[in-house]
Length: 175
View 1: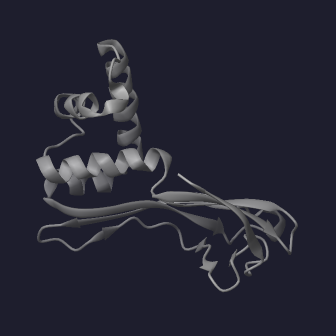
View 2 (view 1 turned 60 degrees about the horizontal axis):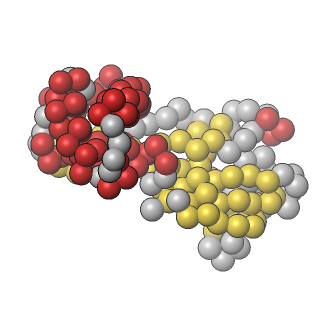
C-alpha cells in the first residue's frame, strides 16, 4: 500500500505532495518482479512476456469482458513501461541470476544542489533486488539526492526548501 501525503509548509507557505510506498505504476513493477521470481524467465524477451503476462491479465477480474485487442494494447503499454523502468545493469542482473526477493516503492527526495527557491519534492522509485549467491542490489542515485523524512511526533515532513521538519501534513490519500 502507498499514500499521497499533502502538506503545508510553515516556512515557505507552499503545499507539497509526498508519495510513499507502493503506488500507481510501481504496483506494475512489483507484480512484474513477483512473476519473475516465480517463473525465473527473461521477461525482457517479448515472447516470454506475452506468454506469461497474458494469463496474468486474463486472471485479473478487472479485465473481465475486455477484448483480445484491448488486452494486447495493455500488454504493449506494460511491456514498454517495464523495459523503460529498469536500467541496463538491473536487466543484466535479472537475466543472469536467480531472483529471491525484491522491494520496490516510491519515496520523496530533493536535489540538495539546487538553490533553495528551486528545490521541489521529487518522488522516485527505490529498488532492492536479492539474488542467489549475489550481494543485494540497491538502485543508487547521485549524492545530491536528499531523502525527505517524516517525523511522527511533529506530524511533519522535511520541507524541500528549508530542509527542516516544517511541512505539516494536511491530508493523506491511501492509494
